[in-house]
Image (cartoon, rainbow, N blue to C red; front, top):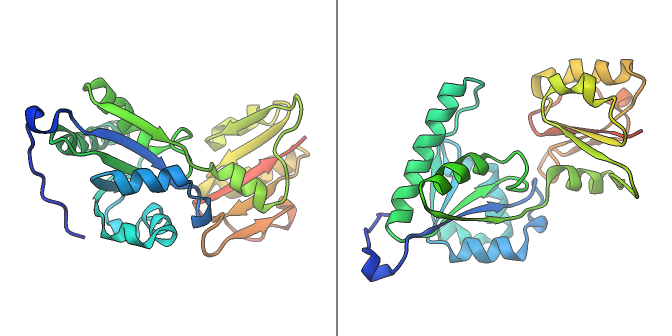
Length: 241
């Protein structure tokens, strides 16, 4: 999709720099898109998604399925490599932030469309901090977090009363995390799924599993013992005491 031509508008003409919005569109089901997210996307001058191609972005696909007319907005993609190399990540985040700032300096509001909720392990947060440090305004528009949608798909609650909720973002946290009281959510185990599965079962626990929540190919399993095969990137496990 062609990028929108940037017209530089002076402060005297526009009166302010643009605002950078992080917009959570939920984990997959377009019906979970909030009314506020829809309004902000409609009001932003340009919309961005992480990735190499706009139309390949799951966040874009969710937004368009929910509000087809958003396809007529100006969209652009922001390359964000999937790597553990800190230097590479830092450089890509800085380049992406500079890309956003070019629009903001021209007085245009930019919406960064992100899966799930923008306050929870969101790509947006890396750009948010960099852009804030450079003196521009940012706003967060919350979306439904994946673990809340997964609990609903399982027809199960997460916590009740004084129970604790723990989010584990990497397999390395599992050994100590399983010792914590309450409910444990293991996010995106990815290639470590088999290791995570055996570690949970060997510890005497069971887990509920949801893959591709709200997306095509959604898979739900109430017992990890019954899960067959590997799991994709958009998978999470819920372990309850």
